[in-house]
Image 1 (cartoon, rainbow, N blue to C red):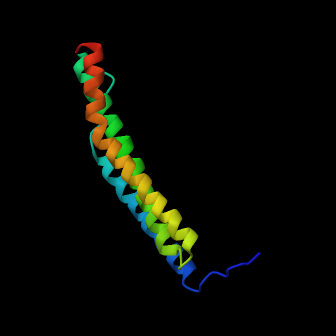
Image 2 (image 1 turned 90 degrees about the horizontal axis):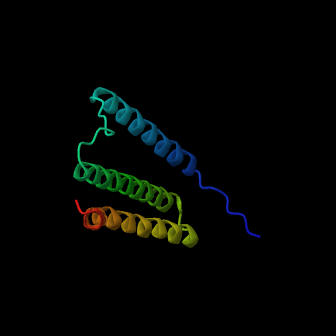
Image 3 (image 1 turned 60 degrees about the vertical axis):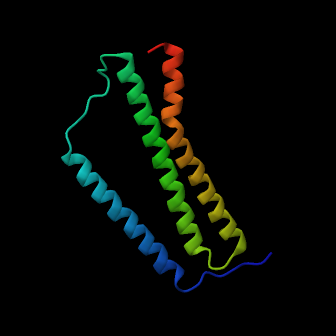
Amino acid sequence: MRVIAPSPGRPARTGLVAGFAVLGLLLTTASASAEATHVVALAPTIDAVLTNIRNWIMGILALLATVFVTIGGVRYVLANGDPSEVEAAKRSFKSAGFGYALAALAPLVVEVLRGIVGA
């Protein structure tokens, strides 16, 4: 079993990535608290409910895809030339691509639901 020692720059890069993640979280939280609260439970029609479903599906899928892009980017930067880590990063990028494609297809899924419900 071969043990690969971390490079001297790896802890600094990890701290830098963690710092950017915390900064992004703080900025997102600050902007989210400044917005007005939306109540999504009061939908007057089936059409409004289906539109809300579409918006939630697209948002969740886009968020997950963005997380996978971020994970892939961090893995790629921290791979340090390790081929297995580079392949893992490429798999994360591929998963993110599938997530963005599904987010783009979410309106089609809602249109099919509209056809089934008859709205």
